[in-house]
Image 1 (cartoon, rainbow, N blue to C red):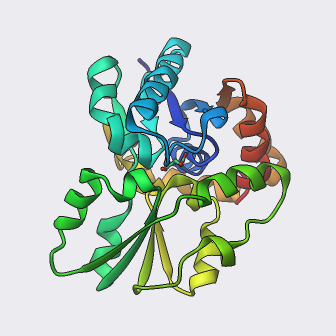
Image 2: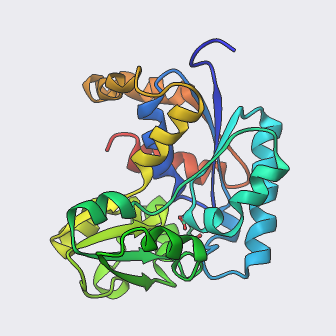
Image 3: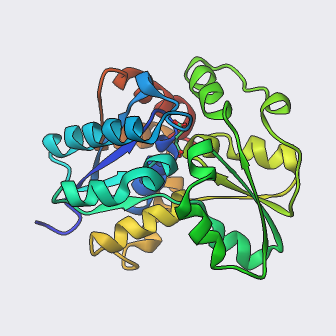
Amino acid sequence: MEKGNFTVGVFDSGLGGLSVLAACMRRLPDAKFCYLGDNEHAPYGALPEHAVRSLVLRGVKRLTEYGADAVVLACNTATVVCIEEVRRTFQVPVVGVEPAVKPAALRYLRVQVLATPLTARSARLARLISRFPEREFIVTPLPHLAAAIEEALPYGKRVDLQKELPPARGDCIVLGCTHYALLRREIAAFYGQEVFDGAEGTAERLADVLGMGNENHLRTLCNHERPRENLFGYHKKRVVFLGNSAKLNEVTYFTNICFQ
Ligand code: DGL
């Protein structure tokens, strides 16, 4: 395959993975993308694990049938529940997103992680956190925030963060759900603390897996220099939205994320 000529499949329970899609598109300016957000079944975070597993396998199958050369599980919940099984089932490389615990722990003593209930109680998150025994972690499950974001964002409505977010209990915030990253700026303003999410780290990992590490790095800056109109056309040609809610995801991407 020609260098950079990849199609990357990006999967999430709904809109959250759009934050990861945006980072991957910035990081790999020559790749094409297909996005599948399973909005009908979102939120995944409060479902039984077996239900999440079968929905994720079905979604990834759809992406590989479309022709994805690599798949990004742009969903922390899917990653903690079944990334190993997804890797065993499909031939393509699979990259998962995980909470950006490391950069947060390198800078702060008390790290508050916000996540869906499934991610919050997962062994995978516990393992990640255990690598930083000198730090204090406060893991807070949020059963309603992902759903509130699904219901608000595509329709230009606001999410009542006062109602949805717990009080600050650490020195910084890690967003352990890709939906929350869509409100990254608002959450940072709410807490007045530094906020970390896993989107850029996932994009970097994807670049490594595709053999595109480092070399292209500086090109991530280029998008910001493009005039808005051209940027729109440029993005339009690079991403295909799949699934029953494709329109919802597409509209949300182009109105909320593409130009951030
Ligand atoms: N965006 C997903 C995550 O990163 C899942 C949110 C949900 O569907 O509950 O965990």
